[in-house]
Length: 262
Ligand SMILES: C[S@@+](CC[C@H](N)C(=O)[O-])C[C@H]1O[C@@H](n2cnc3c(N)ncnc32)[C@H](O)[C@@H]1O
Image (cartoon, rainbow, N blue to C red; front, side, top):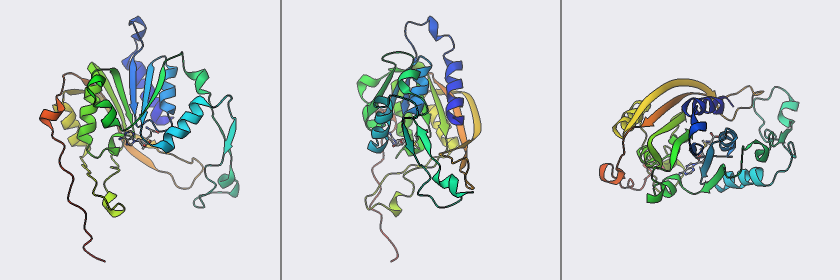
């Protein structure tokens, strides 16, 4: 909850006076994973829409969101198949009851939570998605892009003018090593943090808040091995519209990767 807690606090600060508005703030959460953050956002009374393209994630989130009826209904053993870095045998075999909360009880009202299956760029670059959301929250997401500039464009496209982009995460570009395990060529644009912020500024975003946060990811708190990212956290405001296609052309895919040694 460290990452989610920080994001939720920022949302509360951003929309502290929303009860005077005619509808709750609309928040888009691309790369929603198991949709827990979506549930937490909807629990604030906001309209949360999660977007996800992985069937593994969608099936699991749908199961938890739509087919659980009580807390601790099922038991999973997440570390059973991992033999490394356990302090005790009991740590490896320990059980975790799920769900720890019932989404249906947490979400503040009907119609506040929706999930949209599909590729973020494909779905949300559509003309009818323009300016639909008051806020986009990206948590450990922007580095999943083939071209992070395209993500920035689509985030801008979906936001209303004056809308907010909250981001938390590292830059572990998912496609950076694709040439080592895929036979198909995959585009991977790997910008530094500095360049992303520069590009966001050029696209009409103003940086309001920025921090570097030490955040764990998928941690087994009992393990002798933990991953902690020094993640970038920011809140930006969309101050002007950006017309993508005319200004940044998506580069053609690179030539097929060829091995130079056996
Ligand atoms: C590193 S995980 C983060 C999950 C979640 N935001 C969290 O913090 O727990 C990135 C997620 O983005 C999803 N994803 C990656 N590329 C995507 C795309 N183009 N469109 C939609 N979802 C995508 C992945 O399937 C994965 O669930």
